[in-house]
Image (cartoon, rainbow, N blue to C red; front, side, top):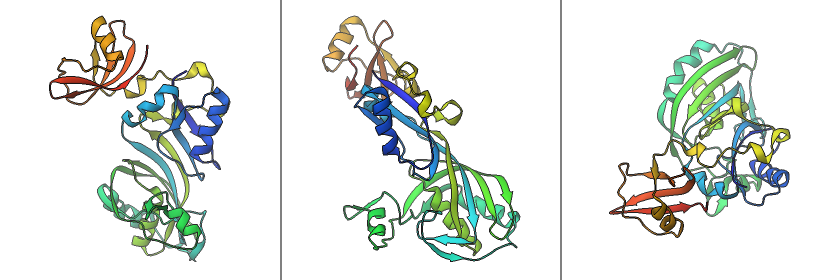
Length: 284
């Protein structure tokens, strides 16, 4: 059994919990996921089963979220799960003020991840240090925001803004909520998060746990169809499956999907100097 699942992760459980549950549902030990989601977030969680776990690193980039930002609140975790550090009504805040700032969050930006995050500092996760009472500032990182669009605006003492955010890997949406609140001078936290797209998987095609069945696994090569393909002869396929390098130059100098003459998926290869080399070999 091998393939991918486009899982719609529910609220309240971790990505690791999802993997454990899929293992039990499919009776398969070898299960992994791409793109961690916090328990307070729902939405697309790509799951790999069996040999497909070896292909997780080849999935295409890109993530999209529907985020709810609440203004007038500051917490130590940058979301509603943490301790409230500051709370002040900001009924006079307008959507026009916010929209004037949003372009500052587009493109390649410098971001400070939340103190409660899975980033390691000194061999320990930041959330572990924070829970132990040791608040360590995360190192700055560069992230890519391709799109940030206002979906809904709800005014009030603690107004809320719904944003659609298209971004690269490693982006913390909680940090966007916090930084937007700081720029406005009223504070802000992430009040809700749903991932609508991740690594080529879309929310509209995602499945609940109740829908997970072995027969609905997505074929291993379909989520990596963005990679160029190479077809091997019968003799080349035999040597490929033995892990041998092939003297077959390819036109695209990147990772390639590899197939035999019958169209069966054989794995991932890469051109290295004058040889086409196996990177991941799938037995057929």
